[in-house]
Amino acid sequence: MKEGPDIAQIGALIGDPARANMLTVLMGGRALTATELAGAAGITLSTASSHLAKLEAGGLVSQRKQGRHRYFALADDEVGLMLEGLMGFAAHRGFLRARPGPKDPALRKARVCYNHLAGDFGVRMLDRLVADGHVAIDGDDAALTAEGEAKMAGIGIDVTGLRSQRRPVCRTCLDWSERRSHLAGSLGEALLSRFIEMGWARRSEDSRAIRFTPKGERQFLDLFPQPERR
Amino acid sequence: MKEGPDIAQIGALIGDPARANMLTVLMGGRALTATELAGAAGITLSTASSHLAKLEAGGLVSQRKQGRHRYFALADDEVGLMLEGLMGFAAHRGFLRARPGPKDPALRKARVCYNHLAGDFGVRMLDRLVADGHVAIDGDDAALTAEGEAKMAGIGIDVTGLRSQRRPVCRTCLDWSERRSHLAGSLGEALLSRFIEMGWARRSEDSRAIRFTPKGERQFLDLFPQPERR
DNA sequence: TTCATACTTCGATCGTAACCGAAGCATTGC
DNA sequence: GCAATGCTTCGGTTACGATCGAAGTATGAA
Image (cartoon, rainbow over all chains, first blue to last red; front, side):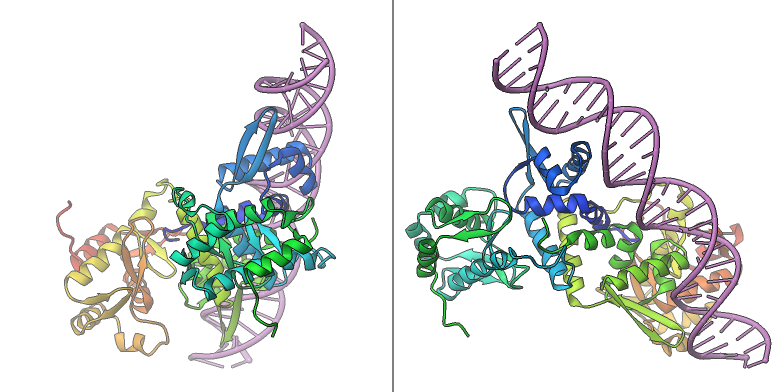
C-alpha cells in the first residue's frame, strides 16, 4: 500500500471486453463514430456511449465533434504504444481473441499501429534505417541522423516540419507479431502517410492490415532493401 | 473483429485493485508468501489466495513451494517489463494511487505494513535509528550497525537469530502516508512483535491500525525520542 | 501422536458495473 | 417551422466477481 502509479485504473479500463474491442479497433488509426464503435464491439449505442465516456475520462481516447458526428480516436501516440506493448505481451502468452483467421498473415506482413507501419514490413524498415545509419537507436530512444534526414527529404518528408511539433520525431514501438521494434513517432506516421499518398499501399477497410500494391511493394523494397532471407 | 491479441483478459487481471497492489509489491522483485501479499493488499488470506490463483492461471505470477510456505513472484522478466510499461504510462498520466482518505487518522499514525510498523510512528522510528547511527542506509539497502545491535539487544531482540533467517534483517519500505521510508525486514517485524509482546501496542481487530496504549506510547517515545515538532 | 502454521476450497453475501430501452438534447436538412 | 440523425443521460435489471468466515488440506514442529 505504497504511493506509486495506479495500474489498476488503467487495467480496469482495458479489462472490459467491450472497451478492449473498441481500443483494438481504434489501433487501426482511424477516427470512428460512436455508432461504428458500438457495432464493432457488439453493444448498443447507449452502452458504447457510456464506455466511451469512461475511456475519455481516463485519457485513453479523445473525441472531435464534426457536425452531428463525434469522431473518437486514441488520445495520442503514448496510448498506442502502451496498447501495442500490452498486445505484444498478450500475443506471446497466447491470449488471442480467436483462432488466427485468414487475415492473420496479412496482418503479420504489414499493418497499421495507430498511425505508423507495423508488422514484418515495419520491422524491416527500421532495421534497414538503422543498418544504413539513418536512424540511431539508443536504448528506447531513437534519433534521425543527418544522412537519415537527407533520405527522408528524398522520399518527400519535411523533417524540419516534424521537429517543430511537440511530439517526438522518432520512437521505437515493440511489434507484437515480430517481437522486435518498428518505427513510431511523427516520422513513423509521416512515412506511412507518404506510402499511402504515393499509392504504394492502402489501408484495409475492415482490419488493421495494410495492403501494398505489387508496384508499391517493389518500390518499398527498393527504398529499404532487405538482406538475403536466412 | 476476431483476430489479434486479447488485451481484455490481461487488463481485467490487472484491473482489480487488490491484484494490482499485489503485482506492484511483487515488482520489488522479492518472492512473497500469500500471507504477506494479503497484508500488502489489505485483504484476507482467502481472498488473496483466490486472486493469486487467477494471476497464476493468467501466467503473471508463479509460485514456488518451500516447506509450508508458498512464495509468489512475478512469472518472468516479461511480466515485469509489461507492468513497468503500464506504470510508466500511468505515472505520466497522473494515475497515482489515491491516498486512502484520512478517514482513519489512526492508520496514518501507526499501522502494520506486512508485518512491521508503518505510518508516522514507523517513519519516526527509522529516522531516529538512522540519526543515532544504529541503522545505516545506503540507497534502498539498510544495515544494522554494531551500536544498533546493542540497542536491539537492550530491547530484547536477538539479532543473531534474525540473521540466521533467509530474509533480510533490515529493509526500507516507502510509506504511502508519509512519503518517507520506514523499517521493514525481519528486524522491522521483530520490533513490532516486541512492542505488542510488551503490551505497548496492539493490532486493531478490524483494520491495519496499530493502537498504542498511553504507557506504551510514552515508552516508545522514550526509546525513540523525537526532535521538536517543526 | 498432537498441535501449529500456511494455504486452499467452499458457500454465501453483497456491491458494482455492464447492459438495454426510452427519453432527452443537439445538429442538420427539408 | 418540422422531421431525421447522432449521441447522451436516466432508470431499472441483472450478472459477475470480490469479499469473508469457516472448514478442509498439507507441511513442519513438539
